[in-house]
Length: 420
Image (cartoon, rainbow, N blue to C red; front, side, top):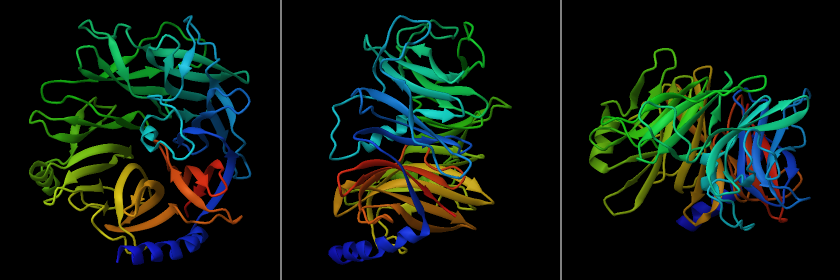
C-alpha cells in the first residue's frame, strides 16, 4: 500500500507545477541557510558560500518593478568590518558544522537572517568564537555592519546578568530588531532594539519580556509589526504559545488556552515546537508520542476560522489532495489575507525521511487544503527535477514563497514560487 501511495504521489507531482510559478533567482554551489522573505514581500535573504572567495556570505535579492527578483548580491561576508568593535566574523551560519552538498540542513531555517528594505538582522560568530546579534544597514549604496549584543556583555536589566546565547533577531516593518537571549543564569529574555537611520549612538536593547516563575524557558519567537509570539513553559511545566501586544505590553497565553487542545497537550504530552505569528493569529508545529511509541507530528492554527483543537495536518493522516502521508512536518510560516490562512511548512515522506519537500496549507472557513509547492519528483518548466526543497524562518508573504532547491543535475538554486 505504501509503495502504491508513493507511486501515485510521483505521478501527480509533475502536474502540480501548473498551479505555481517557480522563478529561479540564482545558482549557488552551497546554500547554508534557506531564504527568508521580508514582511512587505519586497526582498529576501539567505546565507551561502561566495563562489569567488569561498567565504560565507549573506545574500540579498529585491523584488523589481517587473515582478521578478533581482540577482542576489552580497550584503555581508566574513571579511566585513564590524563598526565599533575590533573583531571580525568567523561564521555567519548558526551552529556551524561542515557543509554537505548532498542534503540541506533544514533545521537552520529557524535561525535565519531577516530583512526589511535596507536593513538585515542576523546572528553570527565572531573570530574569537563569541556569538552575537548584529544588523547591516545600507547607506549611500554601501552596507555597514553594527553589533546589537554580544556574548559576555552586560544585559540592560536591573539584576546584573550577562548575555550567554541568542536567536537570530527579527527585523520588523517598524525598524525594530526583536530577539531572544539567554543569560548566564539560564533565564530567558526578549529584547527590542530600535535601529537608527543615521549614525548610531550608544543605544541599548530594551527588555520586553522576562522569564518568571509562571512563564520561563522561551524557545523561539516570530514577529509581525513589532508584535510577536513565543513558546514557553508555564508554571506546571507545560509548553504553551504566548503572544506579546506592543500597545499594552501584555504577554499572554494564546494556545492551548484551556480548550480541548490543552487537554491533549497535558494528557498526551504534545509539545509545541516552531511557532509563527501574523496579524494576531498563530500557527505552530507539535511532536507527540502515540500509544505505539511512535512520533506523531502536526501543525495547529487558529487562522482561516480554524479551531486549535483540530490539527491543520498530522503525520498519521493521508493528505487526500496528493495521496501521501508525511512522516514528519515542521517549520510552519503563517500568512493571512482576506480571512484566509496560508501556512507553508516542510515535510518528509515516510518512504525516505532524508528528502525534504515544501507544502502549503490553505485554511478558509474552517476547511483545509494541502498543496505541494516544491517536492521531490516535481519537474520545473525547463525539465529539471526537484530532489529536495527547504524554506527559511519566514517563508511566505503576499503570495511569494522563497525556496532553496536541489535539482537532479546537481545544481543548488534559490527560487521563488507564487501562490494565487
